[in-house]
Image (cartoon, rainbow, N blue to C red; front, side, top):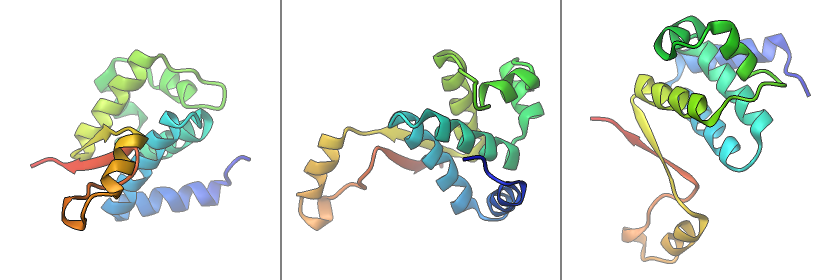
Length: 130
C-alpha cells in the first residue's frame, strides 16, 4: 500500500524534529531489510534520507547520481549490496550511531541472564558515538 503525501510529510517533519524518532526510523529500516521485508526497508530508508541528509548530499558522498539513488529505493529498485552497505555506513556516520547485528539466539540467551547482565533484545542495537 502506498503512503499518502501527508503521511510522508508527517514522518519527515517528526524525523527532523525528534532525534529519537529519526534513529528509530533508521533502525526500523535496517531491521526490515535484515528480516526480508525489503520493500518496507527501502521505503523507510527513502523517508529517512528525505528527512535527513537528502538525496543530493547522499549522491555527492557516494558518487551515485541522485536519480539512481531515488530509483534504488523505489518500489522496483534493487540496490547492490555494495551500494546499500556504503549508503547505510554513511547514514550511520551522519546520524552519529552505529548499529550491530545480533543473532536471535544471542538475544534469547541474554533474556535468561540476571537483570544486571542483560543486553538489549532485538537484531539491531544502537551505539551512540562519543
